[in-house]
Length: 182
Image (cartoon, rainbow, N blue to C red):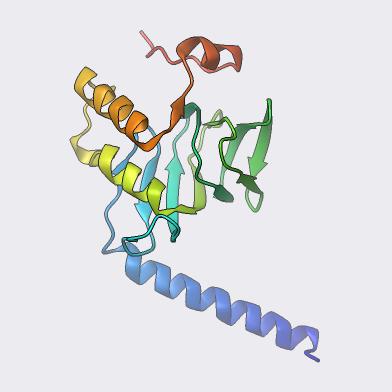
C-alpha cells in the first residue's frame, strides 16, 4: 500500500512527465481555427473511424459553437477558464477541472461568455479529426467572419459527414445569435 506522500510523488511525476511531453509536442503542432475555436491535435493522424484523438481547444471570449449533433462521442475537460455547454436542453456552466461527456446524436452547443479564453481538452473520434482538418483555417489567414465560400465548405462537409447543424432559429431559441455584430 502506498502512503500519501508516495502517492503524491507519483501523481507529481506523472503530471510532470505529461507536461514535458505536451510542451515538446506543442511547439511542432499547428493550430487551426474551426469557425471560432482554435484547435491543435495532440495525437498523430488516425486512419480508422474508431480510433480516438486528443485535441486542445481554446475558445476565446465571446466565441460560440452553434447547436449541432453528430454520431461521434465527445468528452471534454476544462483545463482553464469558464464556458457554458448546452446539452440535454439546458445550459451547464463549466470551470477548470469540470468535464462533460456528450453521447452520439445529442444536440449540443458551446459559448464563452467570460472575458478570458477557455482551454478545453477534447477526446473524440478520428472522424471528427478529419472533419476539423477539412474545415479548419490557419488562424493567421483569418481577416474577419467566414466568407460565403468558407461557410459553403462547412455546410457541404457537415452534410457529407452526416452532422446536423441547427438553424438560426433553433440557435436563437437557446440564446445563441448567429448574426455577426454590426
